[in-house]
Length: 349
Image (cartoon, rainbow, N blue to C red; front, side, top):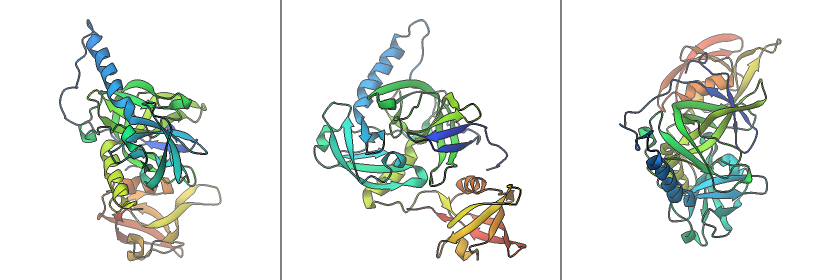
């Protein structure tokens, strides 16, 4: 990804206040055909009927999740009581309270596993799981720009809320700037449906009553200190299903389709405070960086021919690559610059 192509928008993880940078990658539009519902301006009733039908069908599959520190949303994933949500909604919690939209009363769920790089997690209700209604998940590769969607969740403590908008773009990359926040969401869906604190982990739904994404981010203008209306982001349903299936199977992720260099690093700066590269703090044993001969103290100044003045730029570049890709890195070691080739691995938990 060309680091020079980035919007000035910033977004935040919900319900927290973690600032993230939105990288304005070219939006990819699929070719799945005509919209599911035609709009007749002279007779809007069919569209309203579609809205009402979608809400009746899907809202019962959206739950409120409460921990000691926060409140968010989740979507019932299967008939075993598994619920998918955002990792940042759970924090360090091991058990959480779940309130179904059906009004079945508060249920208790255990955290099965989480994958913070994609900000996804799975919790499981073991008692009274039959009271939960399973949602249907779409093939997010078939989503179209301009497609009408509804965001369902529990924003600002207002349970069972629904907002309406369209898919504004696909293929966005959203990464966190905050220390301790490891989420970098690739192929994110941008939507104009209002997303507020508490919507995190809920459902972005098409008019075919299918979940196309999990709302996760809301944009804001840092210069003005306020929200950027109509700009929110959701994790695509295909990513959700890939990660959730692995967490349910083993409690961890081994194949994420996300590339990794296998380093712990931070942005290096000169005496003037200017970013100068990515300083390696630690190298994963047997990982791609280790095999390429990188070691703590090395500074990566370019990857694939693109300058990497900061960790964020390097992360965004790696996010555009596939596991197994060979990448040339320009590295400063003991004051001398040399080039190495690293074969990227697959990011796991």
